[in-house]
Image 1 (cartoon, rainbow, N blue to C red):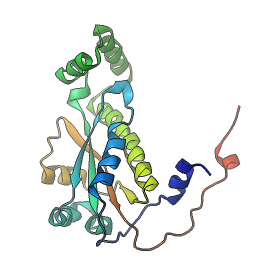
Image 2: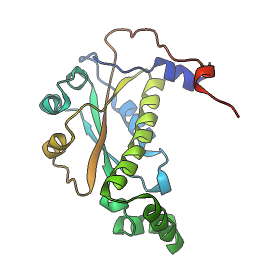
Image 3: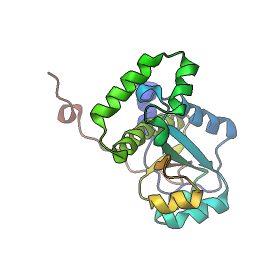
Length: 203
């Protein structure tokens, strides 16, 4: 089995972490770097992160996250935010990105055409941007698994209440999902997945 598949076999949705074991700073930075390097639609880099290491803050967040133990026992909580207004063409954010990458006006025209054809309202932009966060999350979780670090994807939270608590301005950013990282306190059950034949159709 190759190393990536080994890491993916190791990974599981860890519900309770060893609260006494912390992730080394250099390994945490590698996990964040994996997120930073993740591709995004049109290269807009839609996703921003808030890393919560402070134990008191994690516990204060718990009521907005259904009091899940992943929060209080994790080494780190990473909140993935998705840009909204900034990624609607044209915008100053996109013009700055074009300058950084050496793109000309044809890039903006392609992006505007794509958005006009596919998005009807702000909710469509939010949905598109949030989907990019899941790509980032996958990279981070797999990177963590490579290093023997456990994680859990969390979608069970009160989005608007958590955004208010963290001071997030909803007109330009929305929380897409939350990740928790740490070390398992017990071994998980054997991973069960459907066979390739059940999942894959080759034409």
